[in-house]
Length: 420
Image (cartoon, rainbow, N blue to C red; front, side, top):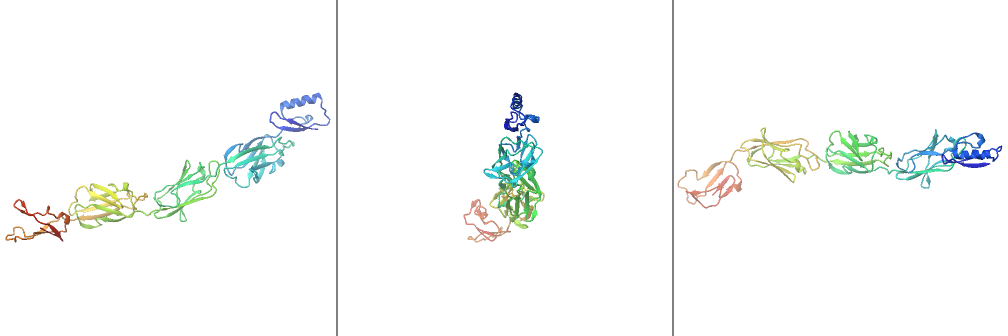
């Protein structure tokens, strides 16, 4: 005769066989009452119980677990040793919805392990089941199927990069940053999983990780006008052990370094006027904040000339605070502190020099000083030692007086001669 016995301790419903030589007498009833009180324990054969009821005491992942790694092995631990022959792919089942997940089942000690044949899907609910066909060595079966579920985490992705894919004119001092969709395992972000290349050459650099951002700092400055390719390998994993679905590649190009294409005065110029505004024209737009009296200097020997620096378009201008000295050598310098709008600096200081001329003089007049018997309709002229600024030759700067009275007249200028 077969009867069912419920374990008050384990919650398991156990089956036992009453030996034919015993009858339902009061002694048996009392014994069974005691067993009902004590639970499903192993007892002597006379009671008719074969053994303890097996139950699942824990699982990994636990029931209701979230963000489970997609490469997780699923395990179930029993309250006692089980018959390994009954722990297999038919009694330990994993499903995604109505689809059974393929995998291998192993058993050791009191723990059964299900190893999926391929990684689990991300952000997906899975249900594990240990069926009642699982038995202990005494052939006691699980009273009921044990069912639990868990949810895998979302697969991590790269959500943005700096520089962005396809960026141009990237500064040579750029630190490359990759932002992920979730917190990552820092130990998986290294030189094997974050690779920067110039052609086939791997670019050396330091890799760090903070928050959800991985950073690559090149050991030396990037090369100008160069294409760089970056790969975030799918060996990077989030803190739950989930790997990216595939490699994430992106690229960017550095810009050309800015250069000074011309200056005014030109290098080695002579006879430069004393009120000259010194200027330099660049090959590309510059960062105006870097065009200043620190990065644009004018010197006479070792003496710094005071002045005001401005920038417009692609031209930097230096206006001396006082006129330059005559017949003097000056040196202009644009330093590497001057940077283009992308942050790229000049490769080296740009240095040039020029020499101012002598002050202009009047070398002849007609009539000459002290002349007599000059014609009353005489055009008076003055010839200079050098070409003059015609705008400065006027009725104010070239005057004729009779005593203290100004003589009215017209002033003109041509070549190096002014006429009244």
